[in-house]
Length: 326
Image (tube, rainbow, N blue to C red):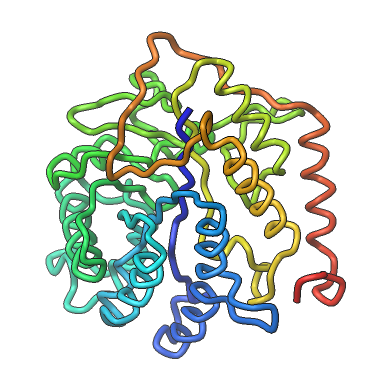
């Protein structure tokens, strides 16, 4: 079963006011995460992956660079490229109204949070702009895409097809906004081809309390991720898609490492490295989609694995001074 370790790479300033002053320190925290312990944002993520010989897919959000300049985006891409990892396209259209000259000069400047708030022509233009910015900064071609907040619809998939992007990894059956106008027509958790675009949805599972969750490093225990992968493979699934972000190894609102999530990510990478023959990590640049004849129920994990997550969440609330990594 192929495993796709995917990372959404983005920068947020905490407010849309005083962006020019807020952006440089926000970039340093979200991308580097420097503290006395080291750089626990993107650099540490890349170091851990490479130490274990694993492949990751880095969905990079480029629209911010149309406001602040390409040099910032180039720094991100250089980090990823130097680590030998894959760069693909991520879009958060919240940046659109911050760009000058306006992307849509005939439309009023207002904040529209998700791609689904844009019509097909607008989405097609935004995907084209994002691709142009990212390919120029990365020096590599884009072949896969993920919408910010998984907020994609049928117009998003049409926009990808119009831009020649072959793979979408936006659909998330655990998010109501994701594929809202495709539900009932498509199984949002099954890899499939739709109007010329290969769909590689987020992997979801039922946790030990019966709740539907997507596989995210910062939001699931290692035991949950391991058991969900094992059950998915036992079902005969051909792939498992995991999510993280450039800032998930950091404590919320700081540049200090989150010891619980760091250890969880290390444990996941050790597990995948130890089982690389049955759980190889892959990229989307050479995507080989599996085909499943029948619809499968989401994988399930045990109650103890989920209770472990609750215990870890309690540990994460401890003051930074009590963290073994600081």
